[in-house]
Amino acid sequence: MYRPAAAPAAAGWRNWIAWVALVLAIGSAIWTGSRLDMHESEAARRLQAGEQRIAQLEAALQHAQALLRDAQSRTAVLESKVLEAAGLQAQIEKLYRNLASDSTDVLLAESESALALASQQLALGSNPQAALGALQEIESRLRRQDDPSLGSVRRALQRDIDRLKEYPAADIGSLALRLDGLLASIDQLPLLASVRTPGQASAEAAAAGLSALRDELQQLFRVRRVDAPDAALLAPGQAYFLRQNLRLLLLNARLSLLSRSEALFRSDLERAIGWLRDYYDDRSRGVAGATAQLRQMLGARIALEPPTLAESLAAVRAARAVREAGR
Image (tube, rainbow, N blue to C red; front, side, top):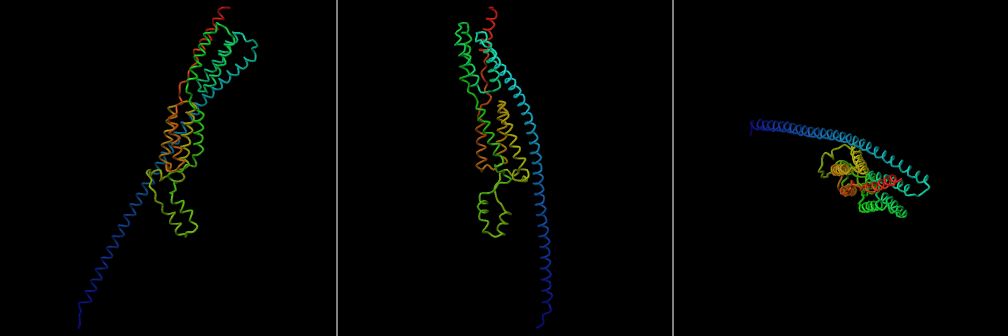
């Protein structure tokens, strides 16, 4: 039997299917292109954000360097005062060598010079135990002199001795050593931008027995939660600036410690803690230990007001004035 309408109908269906396939292909191409554009825009946005963050880091580094220069100038002033105190110490030693007699007048002159030196050392934040020893030596010599007219001087010295014994000196040397230890460990602290996942180390240990394809896939794909995405987006080359900035913060803290500037010392420590929190892997034992040490140092008192020796100095000078007036 002849069916002339079957062939045209089949051809029509094939043409319709071909048009549908063409439309689907065009739609898929448009959708794929839009997704690529979205990915390119997101990558460009993240790259721009990373560049802005790098600019901020460089500005912070310049600010830290300016603070370091200022702290160095303050240290130079302190060193000049130390040199002045050393000159006075040399004069006192020369006085000891040149004076042969141990009369009351000479003893009072030596006591005044020693008290002036001890006062300068206390003002510079030196160890109060040295000043205490100097006062005890002066009091001992006055007691051996056994001069009743020096009773008021000895009483003033004893009161200053008692005040020095009660003075809670800050352990500046120990704090400085702890900061030095942290400075030496900066290069070993892991950054968020270069952190390695716990499973990655074990996978690399067994990499010798795996195929090259699996090794490539492990390098291409890495999944980790990062709460500070900007820190993780930094280029590996910026690790130098991150570490240098932390080093400058700790150096500033050390200079503030030596100059007894408690406000600057606390500010530098808090900024260093924030830097560790924002850019270093807090799951690392080294980072956690460094942060804990800095938080402990925040509670240290370094700007304790030292006692003065004004009462003893006034008593010695008054005794000298009385003896000179009686001649």
